[in-house]
Amino acid sequence: MKIAETQAKDIPAGQKAMIDTRNGIIPAHVVRIDPNVENGTRKVDCALDGPLPSGESGPERRRDD
Image (cartoon, rainbow, N blue to C red; front, top):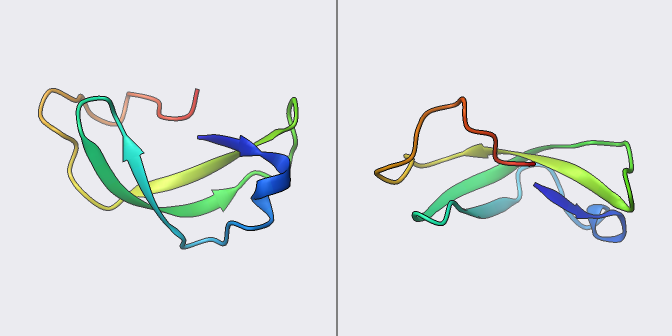
């Protein structure tokens, strides 16, 4: 996912997150914040802590772009 550069400093690795897939919500946690800034945003990588909702496909689906 992408967040504003100004908010990135407030997000620690390990912070809990909720990912909305539009088919359900999956618990997750932050594993990495990209140090590069692109158009005022930084990418945040999250690991899913729960199963994908029914109807979602596997890891080939991107969650950040």
